[in-house]
Length: 474
Image (cartoon, rainbow, N blue to C red; front, side):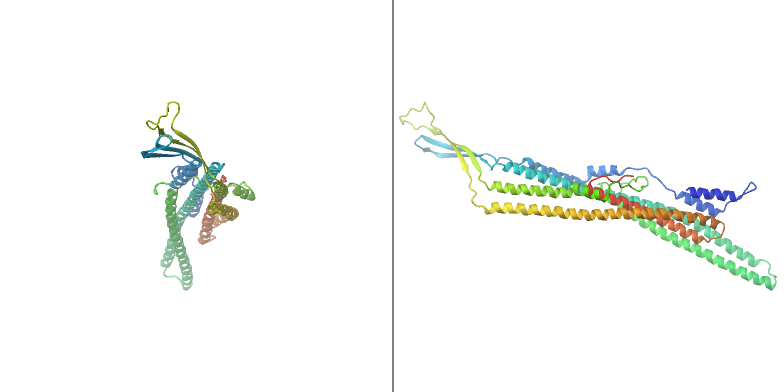
């Protein structure tokens, strides 16, 4: 911006002659106006956090995963004593006993598992519930990553669309100028041919040479027009592709946050290059410490350890305590006075299971141990995969950062080149194609710069997903 203003000041000094203002070259005015318009365009909009909040509250995937966690949490209070058992037997015909006539038989029993079994069952359910919660966190982090990745893709495409539209406007204006120059050159050649028909041979020869030069200039002018139109067609096709991709991403983003596919998405202001403050290997340590999948497999292993403990405890005898009650009626005319004592029988009872079939117990213990080994190995494999993802994400971050620095330097250099060529072009000392090629370089570098910034944000989004730490700041 400052360079463009400085060029205008220098041009003004050169065109002030004895207080008379000279009309500036229209080509110079057009080019400087377009360059000033390419400075930037900011738009206020909703923040990414608003969309993440909406997804948290409305995503069916998150709701299903969280309900799964709540269901697993209900298992914690389920272990306990088995229900008491009541047995009632009624004689269809009274049973004559020594004590009298027995009408019925009642038995109430309560069995008790081996000491520590219920506690182990609750611990196993608790670890399983924690593992399910970590799985919910992984689903949430993955959803947030997809939303952020798509969000930054939308920013990238919107930036490329804005740049492409600005360059299209630039080329349309240049097409008009090139056509004007072409018509002016052909009109000048025609007027020179029709003037002075009775010239000498020498003048005729000079006229033919002038005519050939004018014809060559007209051909070059038309070639420039065609070149501009080719670039316009290419940019229009690129703009159509970008618009189509943008529509697809809008649908994807709305579906990720569970909104109507036609809802409008408002983007933030122009993205600035992010800053990563954490050390590379500190971030890896944080990933190994806080990643939900690692915590899930840790809790799975602890749950299977408790399951093996439960199997061993269930292999011990079960104890049952109860009471047996048998009501009796005295026999008639037995000659015994029953007024001082009861005829009913009350008998305490104790039961004890005999776990002599050990195969099923050993099978349950071995099954739990193998599952515990599976969880441990899955944890180690997950750590390896996370380290690979961390390395790839960090490499993308570093590559994008280096590329961004390079593109900034290239844009600055090409901008200086354009400033020089613009002045030379207004004086007619350089061809139009030189300005055109330099402006196309600016377009390409600006698009690459947007892609580099987008890759930075997407790399940080992946690192956030892996580590559970907020890394994105500007």
